[in-house]
Image 1 (cartoon, helix red, strand yellow):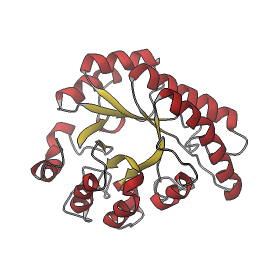
Image 2 (cartoon, rainbow, N blue to C red):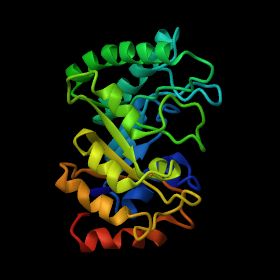
Image 3 (cartoon, rainbow, N blue to C red):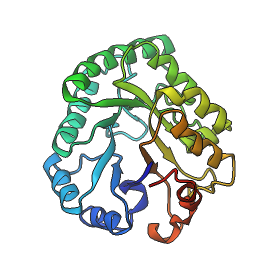
Amino acid sequence: MQLAANLSWLYPHLEWDNRFQAAAHDGFQGVEILQPYAYPPAWYAQHLQNAELTLTLINTPMGQNQGHMGWAAIPGAQQQFQQAFDQARAVAHATGCRRIHVMAGNTKGLSHADCKATLLHNLDYALAFAESDDLILTLEALNRSDIPDYFYYLPEQVLEILRQFDTTRLRLQFDFYHCLKEQQDVSVSVATCGPWIAYVQIAGVDGRYEPDLHQHDLLNALTALPRLGYDDWLGCEYRPRSLPADNLSWCFPLRELGVLQ
């Protein structure tokens, strides 16, 4: 696996123009961007090219109002979802990013059955473009403490959706942080979800700082991923205690075991 820096989380002290080169300077070859929509797609493409970085993951737009968290599972918002997905596709096309996290949305007060039906309909729409654009769409469970009322909060709930589609274009985005916030056994979750995982992210459960791999069985769970077929990016989606490069020692056990390149 290789580390990918989440530019939105790791470098908030820098202007966006400077975050790409900072990540490259710190040794990252891949980066994530939560919401790459403040500038035109070509702007992101140029900065990525200048820094010789791969854009590993983006989210679909979440909506301008606080708490929306996306449109994919919101009944009556199909037009908003399609517009949001088109924006993400434009960024992916310009930058070469192959993974788009489809944000399901805050479904508080809505019928679960209606939300599920809407999500399936919107994913069916999006998957037609994923095939033609050579994209992988991901779904991620978000914990209830940080993000209450999101449509799913456990990876196993996401698997219920994935099983509705017979395609490798729709897969699970597995985040150790969200699993730990839900007090899940991460080794059990990884074993259950392994065949479905197309992207992995990590953060420490306390304060969302750098993870301690010797806690919560994280090291065993991470080392199991290549055996289960996942040997790609490991997204650093955490809040650095200081400068990002000063605290990368957390990943040394993975390098010593040959799990990280």
